[in-house]
Image (cartoon, rainbow, N blue to C red; front, side, top):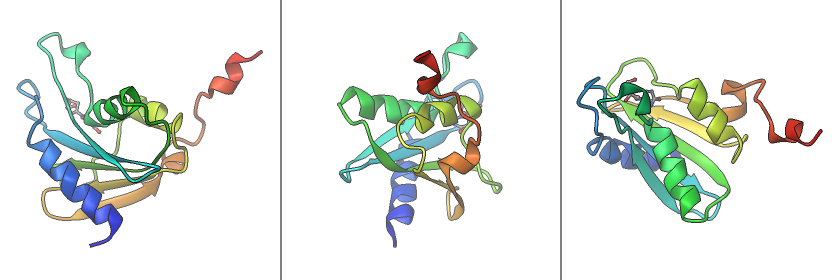
Length: 132
Ligand code: THU
């Protein structure tokens, strides 16, 4: 098992903790920091639907709040045959902390896709534009 497959396995476990009573669509994520630590996330829904947070953002926000700032890889797991790729909002948030990170996607049994984040978000909004 390589590092990507191991991360998918951790995301699969995190998916079990999803709080998804409204959609019934459980997602798990696991993000690997530049120094090799793994932080998990799951989607968290709310009766006020728009307050829902995706698994990917929960994982990176947990890691950021623990002081981590650089990431090399994120795994995302959902129960779908086709790859569950991160939504646009998550791509933008992830990109700011690791444009070169690998995005590994899996389902309950296999890895279904792997991408470089910058390929999933070719024209990101960059904080550099704020320094006019
Ligand atoms: N969701 C994620 O957590 N990550 C994704 O990549 C796609 C969507 C969640 C949000 C919501 O709780 C549910 O899946 C259905 O959209």
